[in-house]
Length: 207
Ligand code: ADP
Image (tube, rainbow, N blue to C red; front, top):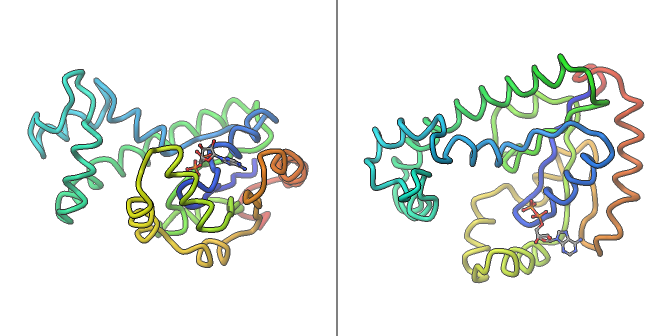
């Protein structure tokens, strides 16, 4: 089964594009959703987080307090490393388990991993047969994230500075979806790639 890594900068439209592929029958594993899952109440990361950061890192419902942790790691690189040393291995093993189950079920034509920091990660590119980049102008990213999250321009630009550049991502792409236009421009592009992915057997060898 072909396995594809879908990436793009914040606000580029990864979620929207991934949903269109899922509607056409693709299996999806969204690493951001897995990160939420392990930090939800009772999630696998919660006891480790309490051990490392104290109970103050949790909200009253027992989920990780994302706002508090974001503020903490923003100003403290060692807290960031600790947080990542807890969450990354858990996300990775859940990803592997989900992918194994999807392959074993054999019900999907191909598998898409949604990985926001695929280009930045040392290992993801070797784990997938193709890299699909959702692309738009940086100004479009800023406008979308300001509208979606209520962030200021400065907040969005600070996040973007910590991500790969648009050029870096495009340099890694096997396939590109242009999402600078209206939402109606997406389905024909997804349809074309869906046909290509269905016609491509195997994973890494297909590259
Ligand atoms: P990502 O998952 O890459 O951060 P999303 O898919 O959440 O991006 O899209 C970011 C925001 O922009 C969302 O609010 C989404 O509804 C909106 N959006 C995405 N694509 C378009 C588009 N082509 N036109 C207008 N709004 C869009």
